[in-house]
Image (cartoon, rainbow, N blue to C red; front, side, top):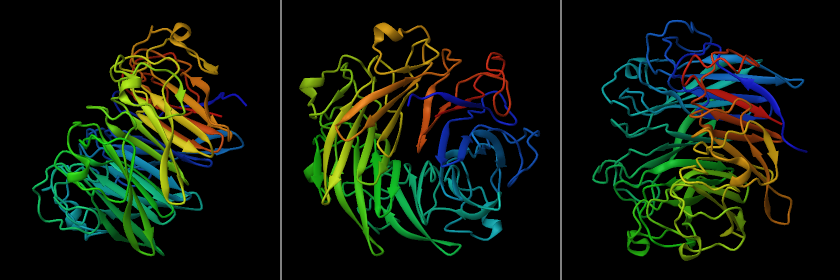
Length: 484
């Protein structure tokens, strides 16, 4: 069945530069949208949206679908709302549990649910925090306020979040310790910006930290935790600043001596698995055409034994899908920052690359792979820099001659399917009100047959569901689109 637009969603308090749609997540008939630049000073669930005295505090909006109709269920703020906190920088949902990251949050608190005074001591600027909310009988309430076990300024804890059942993974790309692998020393901050991931587990209603995770070849500037994904007992972590020059899959935990540093910011992805309560590194993944500045691992999505990885800085001018993983000599570098996606699969504990995916209308600066979402053989890829002026959903794989380049940074999303015989592009998706600068594809999420796309640069002044798309009087307010 072809994709068709089901809903055009705006905030209930649409405002200029709110960046509504910067992050989206969906599970079944519940959709969550982050607006990290929203400015109300409200606290908790359902507060006053009108007082904009907490600039860029951030907000999250929950929508539910009943009988094909979407409506807003909740307007959610942090329990310690503060200007610049960026609540909604990341979002994730699993059933009735919602997770929200706020990378700009400043408290010096440590651990889970610290006593209230610690939440208001803002002496650790941009250390970051994560908030967990639970829904009961349609009503949301905050269950936990989570900080790192080694909270420090500029760590950006909560920049990425992922949840699977009662397991929560949180990335902090600015974390500085020189520890490697699992449970290392958090106190030595001699590897600035190496990054870390924290795994938490819920028992009953209580969250506790299960693991402190670092790369096996951790180094300053690697930004480990740029992206995180979790499925059952598998954790996947991207590190866009990693510099190794290897290609393909290395089993286990290679150290810096093996991986090398000859490809600055090429990026890497690390796969960890859990046995009982113990995590260990299963694999170190690189692109098949590793190159300087590709940022492999800028986004990741895992669905069972299938993994899709974005590399927004990849530069080849190829189009379409290559089943045999190409090398750098094959792909070339003729379309700077066009972006690419790499699909891996796991069999008997071993990972291999299945496909190298490019847009059908590859263009310089398209940033194909800025966001990826994968569910049950449907892969959605956002390219917010794509420049065509089309305003329709096009079946198949249109090329640049069809799409043109009349709307710079309007953005596009590409839907791919795998029916068992390999991957193919099914649909090329544009906003019905596509315009220059909208950034359609900044975020994507998939659940079942539903695709959600965020466009943070969209300028409409509508509120709620199905409003007027034509009035562009609120620059950067942002919007989200639901296709089915």
